[in-house]
Image (cartoon, rainbow, N blue to C red; front, side, top):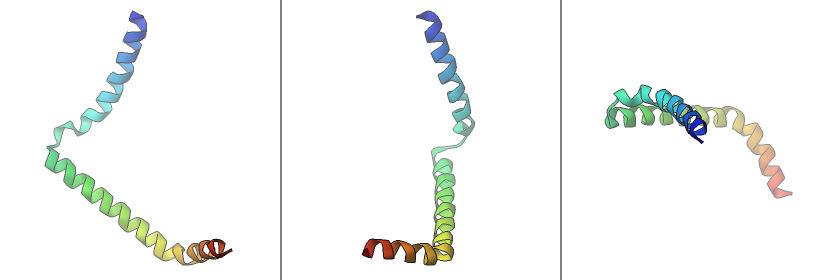
Amino acid sequence: REKDRERAQSRTGNKGKAGSKDDGLTPEQRRERDAKALQEKAAKKAAQAAAGGNTAGGAGGSKNKK
């Protein structure tokens, strides 16, 4: 049991270390960073929908009509 606990702690410890890189940021900074990332992701998705959405959307629409 003790060995298993040590293994579990080492696993969670490694995950915690990966997440601790962002711990230097304040909550406001983190929110700003996340908001920028979401905006970029949404813009990228909108651009893909505009570029490829016409062909893919048309095919999807015909499938729904059938």
